[in-house]
View 1 (cartoon, rainbow, N blue to C red):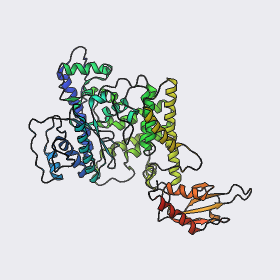
View 2: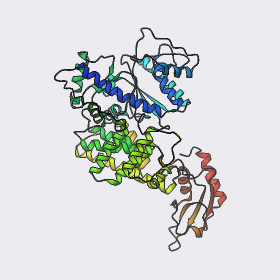
View 3: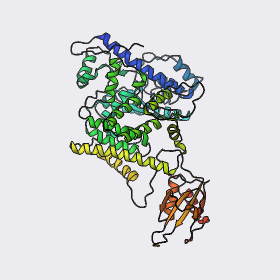
View 4: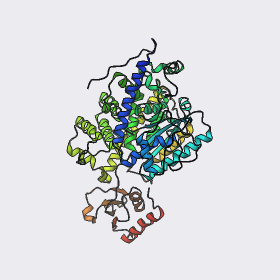
Length: 552
C-alpha cells in the first residue's frame, strides 16, 4: 500500500482550503480505524452501549436510559442517527420510535472516548472514559441536569457489565485551565497540559465536532492561538464543525511534579499502569524545556502520511518513547519492568491457545512486540500464570514496582530542586496526596503493609501453619512465623517462612488483611512454650471475619 504524501502547509504564506480538507480527512481516517478496532473487541451488549450513546445524548426520550426531562440539554452537533444507532436504541426499548428534531439547538458539541479505549491496552475488563463537550453558554442548572442524565446512563451501563466514567467538559473553561479539585478519578490540579496531551493522542471522536488542534501543524504549535483565531475568524474553518481545547506547545515544568505525585497515588491500587505513566512523566521532564510530547509525535506522523494503526496506537507510541529513553541510559532492568507492566496492562495471555477463528488484532500486535523483546514460551507462561502467583512472588513484584515508582519520583523531585520549580498543584490536593502516600508507602513498626495491589487475583492459601520459634542460644529473640501448608516443627527447620513477627496477633492480622486466609483455609499451630491452642487460633481468626468482614 502506497504511503500518502506528506502535508506540510505554510500558514504564513496563505491558507489553502483544499489542504485543510485533506488534513481533516486524514485524521478522520485514523479516527475511523481506531473506532473500528475498538468495536471489534467489544461484546454485543457493550457495542450496543456505544452504538446508542450518540442518540441517547441527541434526544430526550422517556423509554431510554438516563432520561430526566424533555428540557435536559441535548442535540449533538451535526449528528444524524443511522440504522446502527436506531437498532441499538430499539434493542434497549421496543417502544422507542425516533422522530427527527425540528430546528432544535445542539447543546452537545462532541463525544470523545479517551485513555486506553480503542488501544492495544483496552481489554474486555477495562472501563471507558468519555468526554462530553457541551455548549459553554449553558446555565449551571442545565449543566447539573445533564450531569444527572449522564449518571443515569453510567448506571445503565453498569447493569450491562460496563464501567463508564463521563466527564463534562466546557472547552472555554478547559482552555483557561479551570479544573476541579482532587477526587475520585479526577486528576485535579495536578496536571492540565499532560491531560490535554493524553487527550489529543488517545481520543476517538464518536460524534460531533472534531478537535481544531488537528488543523494546526506541529511546527506552528507555538503560534496555536493566533492561527486558530485566524482560521475561525476568516472562516477557513466553520465554528460549528470544530471544538477548541487549546494548544500544548509548552509544558509548565511544575506539572511534572504534581503528575508524579498523582501517579504515585494511583500506583497504590493500579501499579502497572502508574509505573508506565510516571516513567513517561520522567521522560518528558528529562526533555524539558524542549519536550516532544506524544501528541506532537502523533500529529507529525499523520501529517507525514504514516497512518499504520499499529504504530499510531497510543500505548505502542507511549512504550516506544519510554523504550528509547531507557535504552539511551542503558537501563535494561527498568526497561524489562516496563515491558512487564505493558504486557499486564494489555492482559492478552499469549501462551494460551486463542479461541477458534480468533483474529484479535491486539493479540497479533502483542505477538509482534514480544518477539521483538525476545520473550520465549516458558517466560510467557510464567507471566500468564500471574493469577496463581503466591505470596513470595507477589512480594518480589511489589518491591520492584514500588522501587520503580520511587525512582521516577526521586528523579522528578531532583528535577524540581535543580530548576527551582514548585509543583503546579493546589496545597489542598498536595495535602490529600501526601497523606495517602504516607499511609501507603511509609514503613514503620506495627503497620500492616499491603503486598498485593492488584498484582494477582488472590493470595489465599489452603493451609497455614503458625509456629512459635524459640531462640535456643539466647532465649530472648523468640518469634512467631507462618508457613504455607501443614508443617510440623521438624519440617519447618531450614525453611523460610512467609512472615515472622514478635506477636502472634500481628502475624494473624497481617495474613488476614493481605488475603492469605479465608473461611476455608485450614489452620494449625506449633506453639511449644506458649499457651496458644489451635482452637484459640481459629477463634482469633474468626473474630477478624466478624469485626472486619470486608478485610481490606
